[in-house]
Length: 255
Image (tube, rainbow, N blue to C red):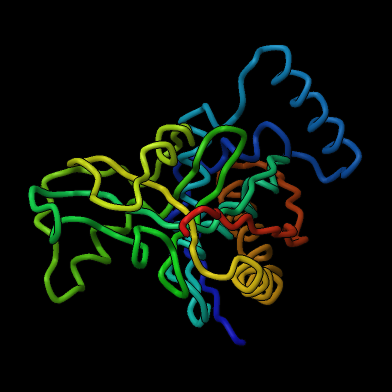
């Protein structure tokens, strides 16, 4: 498999320094680890987490938007966005799990035409019809949401969009997964995240293969974007170029 990654650092300037400012303004790896431990203690003490900071998530989203990849060979842009976001979060010492399942979101008045669906029969993922997202704790992070309308516009019969979706979202897993049903469609403006009904072992292996293949390129691209933006802000930034290890979680239960 071959893939080509392109970076657009200028697109990621807004908000990106929120990621590096807490952990990564030093070239000393030991000091970076000490800062990471201090941050974890602070999170425990305050009961908060960086993903609750809109500025931090804006920086992650900007990094995702700055990196493009062609020739991924499996899935759509949701998988690319999830892999890039997982790397950006890992660079900030935040572990995120990659999940594979399905997603549906009704964006207009018609219950058939106006449903954006990343799924197969039974509202479940199957084969190449699936959705990829990240989870941190009890929250779902999806940085592909902002592209759904642009992707839909290229179809033969685009939806009649009356709902406005954000560029990304961080929402409780219980809210999105708990609403899923094997039949029917969501209400207007509502999203369902559901299971994958294909062979979970085969899908996990396919995703791991893709992650191993493109992971080093993504890691270098994310580091380049973060370092470039930090440099423009006058910050001397050390950024790890090791690829995050991906262990995909296949959402089961679709029957």
